[in-house]
Image (cartoon, rainbow, N blue to C red; front, side, top):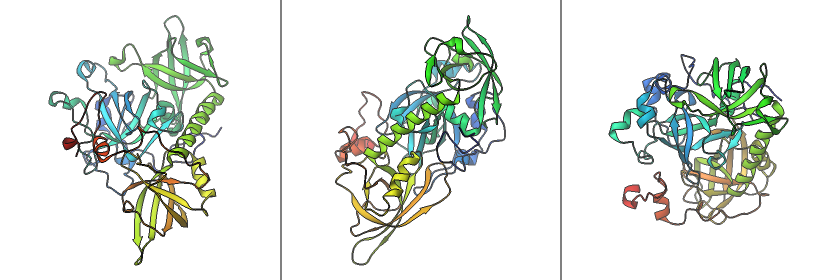
Length: 417
């Protein structure tokens, strides 16, 4: 298995430009310290409609994923407590977020969607304040709790722990195991991640901790001092004191590769049905109908999908309108077919796969405007309809989806608009 450096992930194409500017190496997942790692100008950076916002200007936050709206790509995390952070432990509201249209999600070192990430997963994220026009997507917390929740609530990148640390080249060495107390003492090795945990820590494990060896689950007795492991953290009994438990322990590369391969296959299946997400970057209308459309393909998709699209590049390419949530109406029907003029590759950055398509259309859809999201289909993928709950079925449905709705909560259409 290849060794990872910053900007690469498990058996996936390199993701360049994912280093985050930070003047300190944090020794704990403490929100106060995390917020200090970004300058005031970086924290207030507003993503622009037709760009991939610089990851270096994002605000880093980490916590446990406890609410998910996978259809509209939104959720909520319980931000990690700082040591003796009593107010957050007692009153801390969830940090609700929305994925940017180009936002990437990674699980087990492979591209993912929010529906793949189990509740209770500890995630690391990079967030921006809402883009113009999206300020009402996430409702602000009550005034008395506003100091506990940062305004950065639109995510460019969301990763589970193993994806985050492996991308930066960090893993862990087991120093000691106390089976009677269910405690595992570890120390970081390799290149230290610029945020997150580094150094020596003692973690909890219990009967729900999944321990993997040779691609199979094993008992805790397989945890032995001296071993190099990869981890996904979880909630500990003393989480309020910035302590962590263990959700997953991978004892070898074989097990981690297997987890990544399975997730990669899920991603391939998902996008063959719903098509690759992207954005219209430029449009040139012809005088007598038709025109040229430049489409960029978002990141966070399996390389196999890009290879399949490239293999079909001389066939017709279907491009369907999509909302900011990447939902479509009836993508099988409301699409137009283009012919590839040029397949262009560019450096990969957060949110961008590095693939840019220059397409010629005999018929232009009104949705083909710079900044609008689209879905792109390779010719040899099977034509499959989305499930009813995923489709946008009316303007009311679309307007309702523009704001985060909690279970049982109905947002008036007038307010949603």
